[in-house]
Amino acid sequence: MIIPPHGNAGKGLSRRDFLRATAGTAAFAGMVSTGLGSWVLRPKGAYAASPIKVGIATDITGAISHSGNSCWNTARLAIDEINAAGGIKGRPLEVYLEDTASNETVAVANVRRLIQRDRVDVVLGGITSSMREAIKDPIAKRGRTLYIYPQLYEGQECTPHVFCTGPTPAQQCDDLIPWLIGQGAKRFAFPSANYLWPQLLNKYARKVVEANGGKVVFEEYYPIDQVEYSSTVNRIMTDKVDCVFSTVIPPGVGPFLKQLYEAGYHGRGGKIASVYYDENMLNVHQPHEMEGLASCLDYFQGVDDPFSKALLARYNAKYPGSPYRFTAGSAATGMWRGIKLWEQAVIATDGDLDRESVSKALQTTKIAEGPGGGAEMVPGTGHCRMNMYIAVAKAGTYDLISKSSSAVEPKECGPA
Image 1 (tube, rainbow, N blue to C red):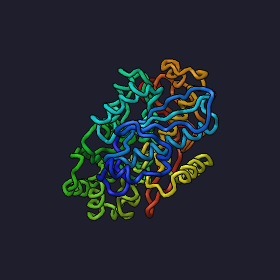
Image 2 (image 1 turned 45 degrees about the vertical axis):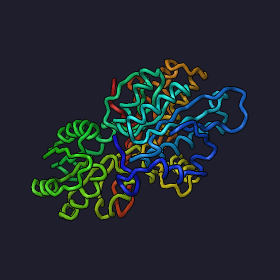
Image 3 (image 1 turned 90 degrees about the vertical axis):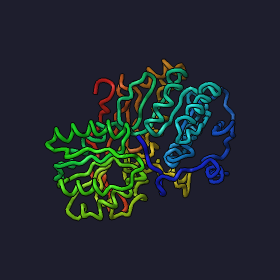
């Protein structure tokens, strides 16, 4: 999966800009640089036991740095709270951060430091699917270290000792698409960026559309940086498409929805769905251009269960005024979920950090509370059940339409 940056889509954060912007901020206070793109945050206070080493590999700089910094903020919040409560089995967590810089080549070299130099006990991170594919080998295969990937994605990641804590296609499509069809959408178009996530997501979504009596009128793939969509918009209008199920991403998605709106698609009652749209995406368009857009995620900031509200409040209090929001699309929710599930696994092993022991325990861990609700791993799959929410953009915010009646199965890598 790829998540666009907040605000100016397509503009990345350089290392120089990052260092200037974060100097002295709460997100990096107390950290020590250990090399280019490397930092360590040691626990405060005195502990009798040696620390457990946690590696975070995420996009601190680069084209999707807003997502990466949201994940980093979330990791800091979760780990600080664990340490404040006494650590895990009396051992504090020591955090090692590597900047994957939205660049797979840079990331592989940086992540190797977590494994070979820092000898961390677990690595969490990665935003895009291409990043996951690049770093999972030096972490899980060659490095023989546990890896937790927090992002919503296209599915089919079944590598041993790799665990996924974001939504899968089944979790995003199985309720959303029948709901769209129930709202009158029968004829679907799948305009898409040309890479792995849209291709595999669309394959699953097509099955759900057809199983529920709908039809995919056309499915097209475009270069990621394409910004001219007049022929696509014309086809949507001519072919009487009821629902545009879009996996176009920035920089193209802004122009695409603008051109679709200007063609009169919204005015004739056309529907739009895009399952990666979270609160960050509200700043990419004018509100009227995405009015009525439906998304399905494991969390929206409007979720009103007490834990979710309190967690968002703690995040905002820790990082006041930060442009890096706590959202599902940025993988922040999957990061929180991953750390807390891993914590439960280490507790279950009585502090044994051997990868085989923790992996076995992680297969059956659960948390009663989390962003959007509790979650639990599905044994033998490396994925977790979680609540899912359908929300619709309205006047520049999201209205929650429905919550899944129970935790939704991932339907990946084994029994569902």
